[in-house]
Length: 112
Image (cartoon, rainbow, N blue to C red):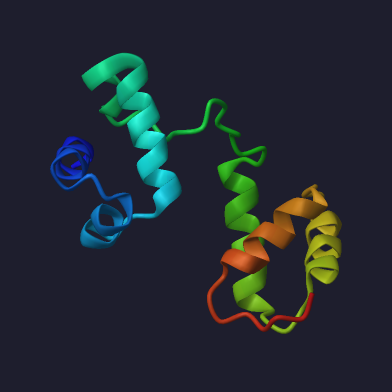
């Protein structure tokens, strides 16, 4: 696609019409053009868009199951009460865990 856009520009010599024709922004066009001028065709190849570092979950599967079980049993309770219930059962859950699972549990009210 990038090469097609640049070839269209070479024929028309009009950046505005080229961008409008392909539905891209002018900054995107200029970025592609600079990349093409810098390293030719290799500059137009798509790069990976994955993050450099992936944050791994800090909770175990047992914690997730326990919190979900309590949330299903007591859907009206907030995250702090869920945490207290888990601590009473000698199950420690970090505060962020119940918050993340609260957000991930479908049908929970937005009471945070």
